[in-house]
Length: 151
Image 1 (spheres, rainbow, N blue to C red):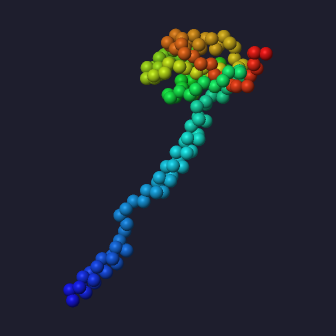
Image 2 (image 1 turned 90 degrees about the horizontal axis):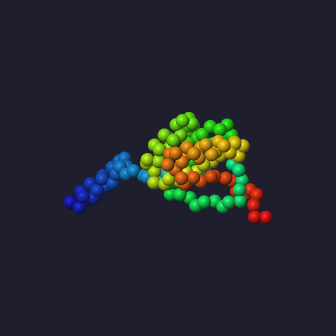
Image 3 (image 1 turned 45 degrees about the vertical axis):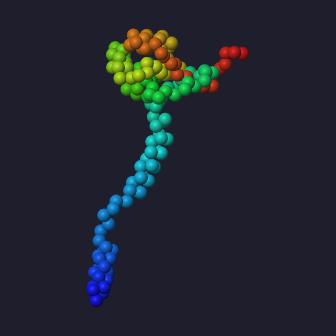
């Protein structure tokens, strides 16, 4: 008889378990959403590096290897305004802003992007400001597919 009582109690326990709320969290949908967002950001990140639209001159040079740190980019569009990392900078503030940024960086390399329509004198003025800020590793960014000079 005592065996029948035990059976009845265990049946009651099973019945309650079916109706009880589940106390475990299912993280599978969360992981799925995070993986989709990761793929979206991996695809979109390279598109966000060059925010200032320029008409770069074309050369026959090959591309440089990528750097482990986000590159320091200075752009000069056709209107001649200087843009430092997608933010416009006043001409008298270029050296000061560069020194502030360089204080927290390992790499002293700067990428100079200049529109092909601006005068060469403006590019040289910006290069002089870069030199005054202590930068000597200046990379001039161009598009590939330009004329070859080797005949």
